[in-house]
Length: 206
Image 1 (cartoon, helix red, strand yellow):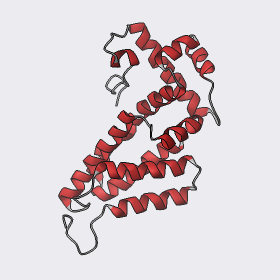
Image 2 (tube, rainbow, N blue to C red; image 1 turned 90 degrees about the vertical axis):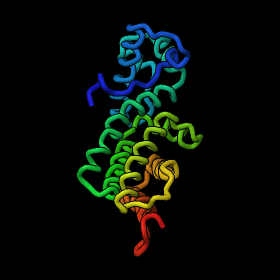
Image 3 (cartoon, helix red, strand yellow; image 1 turned 120 degrees about the horizontal axis):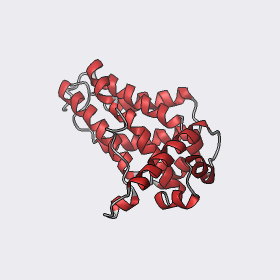
């Protein structure tokens, strides 16, 4: 998906119904891009002052767009989630829905595990239940698409709430952030998918 077609994370001014100047939007996009690179490369916490400096703006400009570190992390997380959510239709075209679900949540888990410079902030957000609501809704919507196709073909149960699956996935997400070995992460994801498959010998809608 090209950057021009990606859904943009709303600016606080947009959420308040105020127009956003073109230069303000440009500064915001630049801050997100710089933060993406900084968070990916860092082994620990990233300085917001350093992000502002590398973006060529003052720290006041950063705080106008992102009043807290959590707001900046949410924006980066939402932006990078685009490619993850966009991969679901191709997986459904190539695999049965249960296999597509396992492949998709595996990709999502890998995406989460690479957020090195965001770990502390993400851990706090998960613990507080604050992980960006719009981002969580996008994950749930993607899971709903896979569940719907799986229910129609009998590969997945018909009585599963996508938000319940998302809640279970967030639990795995917390384990990943706490440094779970890959083998344990894989087992947890396998268990999650097994839970939404029809029981052996039973109809998908039973």
